[in-house]
Length: 151
Image 1 (cartoon, rainbow, N blue to C red):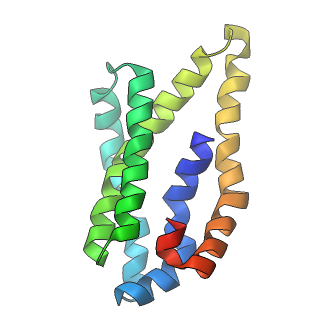
Image 2: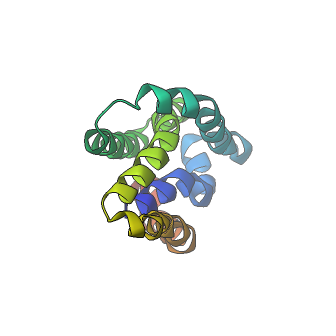
């Protein structure tokens, strides 16, 4: 479920870009930079943050990452301008690689060793479900309630 929510949150901007751009009075290409910024942040922050957080207890770290994603979504929903949205997306982007490392590790340790591979693969079912169902759902919600409501 966490993987579903995280991936949906990661890509939510794509389906909401036209309404977000219109509401924030920016062009769609400028709104598209929110996707680029997220990707660049993931690339450059992932390895050092994953290493930095390696000693933190997994359950606490996982919980704090999910809280950070939730707070970021609230900040985006309440954002008065483009720059606030941009800054609010940096934190979850930086934590995304840590989430995958922690989530995969935790899932593998929750079950017997012989079932670890299957358990880890189930985490990634959330990715597929987010792409197939989550993104279309938030796009529909965005059309019905505005992009802020979708967040």
